[in-house]
Image (cartoon, rainbow, N blue to C red; front, side, top):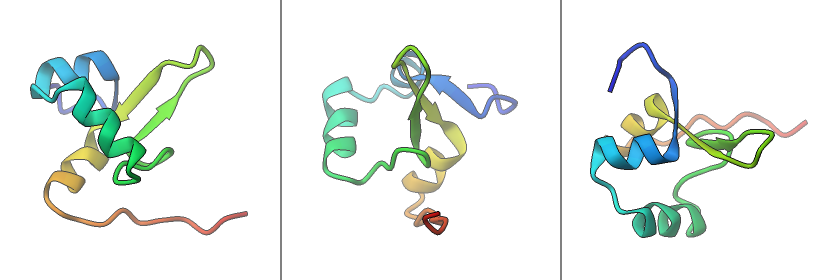
Length: 69
């Protein structure tokens, strides 16, 4: 993965990491991966993954949550 890219489409993330799609969705559905932190949806409802946030998650670091507005 390019270190210059911050967001990649889910398909590329899964291909590059070897993560199973079912595992990724289970992590999302169980609340381990947070929308707006680890992933987001674009206007066409496609999933984009934040590589920096995912690397921090793998290292066991908790995401810094922003206050709700």
